[in-house]
Length: 174
Length: 218
Image (spheres, each protein chain N blue to C red):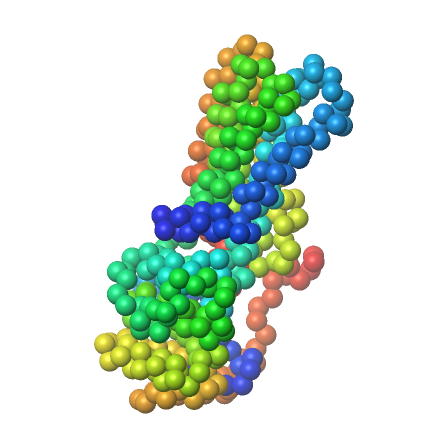
């Protein structure tokens, strides 16, 4: 669990762990194939149906489609266009990518925003099972998750004070 | 990778795709030429290969900024980059899907449009062949331009300016292939050069685009 005020670098830390942003100091020692990153945005294609969206991610991660729809309570929405989903349903569809990936390391950025209480509980259940089966999740959140055994890290004290190295080319010319 | 290509093609065919946009732009552009230069058949026949190639090239530009833009806006690009899919595979798949949804339809549409401009009958086969081959390199180079400008809102014009100079060799070789066929010369050398150029872009551009993409996603 990552906690800290807005702008303290939670998302940056997650993006660095995911390998999107290069670390300015130190190194990340992880097999990138085991990491799945769920950002603020849901990575849902509005033109495709719910089932097609899920099938696409199964295809990308080369995993069999084993009840992802049911796990995230999307079965009854399977043939709906993702464009017509509510914010919470869309978020669930976005999170279902975690299950489709079968990766061990989940990096989650505010995963429960827009979810209702029931589905937060359901998601916590999925998280618990994931961790019980040897997985790990790094979650940045402002909301309380009904999730026990979580280690909490307040990154307020790590707020960077040094200026990041500037690019003289970009600064000078444009 | 195959899944990504299939998804991109599906997306292009659904509403808001862009196949229709490129094709209708091509049609309008070619139909406007006789209105501009006059109905003189001899002039039209002479400039037909060039007009068709420039028209196809400009229509191809229209959909370039969509290659990565839509995926960036809904977060799919971040997810794809972190997925166990090599970046070069991602960029090649994107370019290939663009070619299937833009290059091939344009190449096929060029035949009836060539008829409208009075293209001599000898030229059709080499027109379609040169466009089918040439649009691969147009899609590849265009995908590179799109990768460089990922994350820039309304980057369409920037992509065009970046990419157009890179299109020059393809355009020259493509038009020359058609013109030589019509004039009764052997189109083999220019077609071979065009194919070589296309193969070069297929081999090099995915790597360059991956580097650009990674730098832009920081």
